[in-house]
Amino acid sequence: MPRRTATMLTSTLLLIALLCAAVLIRVPYAEMSPGPTVNTLGEHGGEPVLSIEGRKTYEPSGHLNMTTVRVTGADYRMNLVEAVYGWLAEDSAVVPHDTLYPDDKSAEEVREENAEEFTQSLESAKVAALRELDVPVGERVVVASVVKGGPAEDRLHAGDVITAVDGEAVKQPGDVAELVTEHEPGEDVVFTVVPAKAARAAEKAGEKPTGSREVTVTTDEADDGRAVVGIRAGLDHTFPFEIEIQLADVGGPSAGLMFALGIMDKLTPGDLTGGEFVAGTGTIDGEGRVGPIGGIRMKTIAARDKGAEYFLTPEDNCATAARDVPEGLTLVRVGTIDDALRALEDIREGETAGLPRCTAG
Image 1 (cartoon, rainbow, N blue to C red):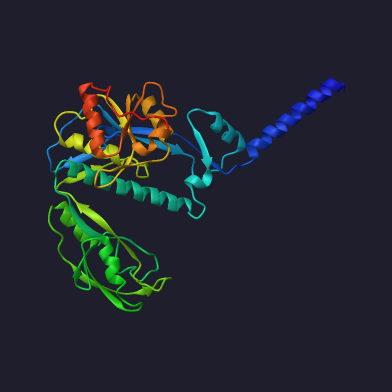
Image 2: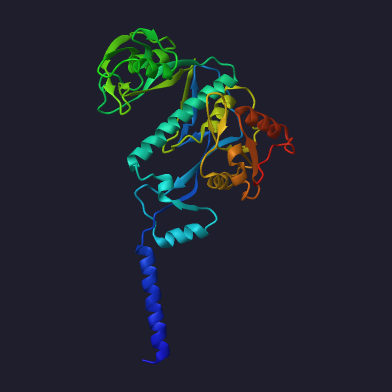
């Protein structure tokens, strides 16, 4: 065989071997890419995203789109070719696998955590929206979770309303821990609770929960010597009418701001957007403060691809987002729900020159 032919054949075989190896080699990275974006004012899967019963509502036009990031699964391991392609692509980001899926958590635990964060974000969105509209919102202390194998297992349940501990009324979740830790390990604590089922039924009927009962739990000893019962108390809210948010296969807290704005738009006449296409992201708390999120670059791409012209951006994400803005998209900086409402007013009135825009840091 001529030397040139042999060299070419050897090189070709070597290249094939390297490509095969690159496909077979798994690397500890995950990929993020633009995910679905959904109009909180519209429908998804044939069902309204926001449904409100027991209160007059309005049908606004325009878009208030929440945005998402698509990520590779917890159990999926990218090969070297996919990682290199992802690094080179403009519409994806390759990050260390444990950034999205910590090694000390199973895939199921990550999914449950994301689902819990999403549920909490919806609760906070409702609270922020109604408070902004001066609609009264009730508060109550509840059992947020029960430790498996702990003293309270099968005695207390998630969603039970805690009205008192040892006969002393509780108003904040911290009151529960304070009263429990006044005991020595091995002593009994008496909880006065309204079972979760009865509390939900009363809320649906617009009534105060009744049917309280006393539950005695024997404390255990924590690693630091404190008395514990194995529950986490949380703050739940009650609303004067029903607000349902239907959106499957979405996790995390980042849609809070857009859901809050969507609720407000449905409850007030006129359009917050003036018919414009506005998208955005950001966590929100009950006081209307907007917090930062992950995957901002992927979300701005998703929004612009869908047709958005304005993107409400948490102020702590602004510098990162402004480094590479999709053409035709205006990034609007917001730190509170009031900031978002002022920006929407400017957009609605066509006075966009003074919008607080994100700048690269």
